[in-house]
Amino acid sequence: MPSAFHHTPNRLEFHTLLACFILGLLIYIIVIFAAYYTQSAIIFGTGGLAAEPPSRFDVATVSFLTSDNVRLKGWWMDTPGAKRAVLFFHGNRRRPADYGLRLRTFARLRVKALLFDYRGFGQSEGSLRRESDIYLDGQAAWNYLHKDQRIPARDIVLWGRSMGGAVAVEIARRQPAGLLVLESTFFNLEEMARIHYAWLPTRYLLKYHFCTGEKVAEVCSPVIVVHSPEDGYIPFDQGRRLFNSAPEPKILLPTAGLHTEFFDGRSDFRAQFFDHFNRMADLGEAMARQP
Image (cartoon, rainbow, N blue to C red; front, top):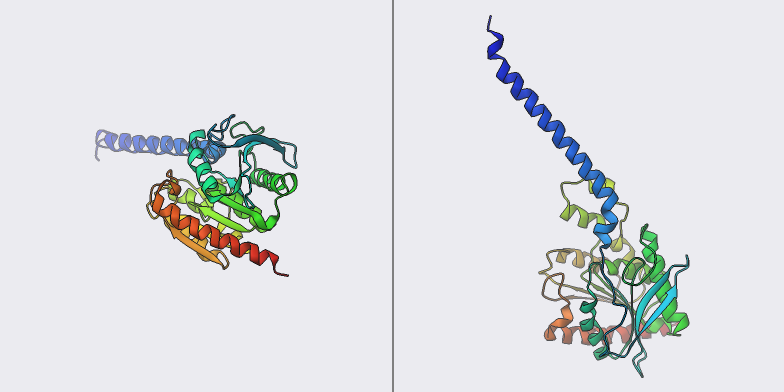
């Protein structure tokens, strides 16, 4: 019979592999739990508007309450003589300095504008614990424009960037608006999670879904989708699918640059957008006036 000596290396190798497998499995389970409990920080990040708006613009700091009594802070640019007002929904992880360019764009478009922070961002109170929380924040901002500033619904432009596009679509399906602008926005969050965390069972982990692609079909206003084919964070196909799901009238405007770059930093794309913006906003106003 073969001696036990010859079997010892095989046993050691087996036990070593088993121990490595168990250790790897435990580490993977820990990572899954960590991803589940930290996903709010991963999705929403930090940042927001500064306490004091840029002095080179005529912008005032404002605040308003949500329906669940959370006080949100924002910037209100009351452009003299302007009829339309943009309600801007920002994405995550933005620095206050990033909004100087966007304010300049609003000034060139000759519109009033409200930029605000969701709960937990910037100077706003509270924290985002459920997906419905951020929609309450968006509705409160719409109420501020429509009721406090007395902007007719047909003159309100809902403009969402990145994650903010999901909020803009949710408000657009609830409330009338003159125009919906979706800039670098995803089709739904589950697909984005699979793209960036393919090694995790994201389908079962996600507490937030942001089914923007399904909801955009319920929007009644004209839609402009702005997206860069060079966007490596939210792929261009996400924007194309949003455009395909949106009802007419609609425009898909391919731009250039990375996800972190604002399209209006490029004069050629800015000029194209301005033309489409004014034309589609006029169309939205005409649609709203129809009986």
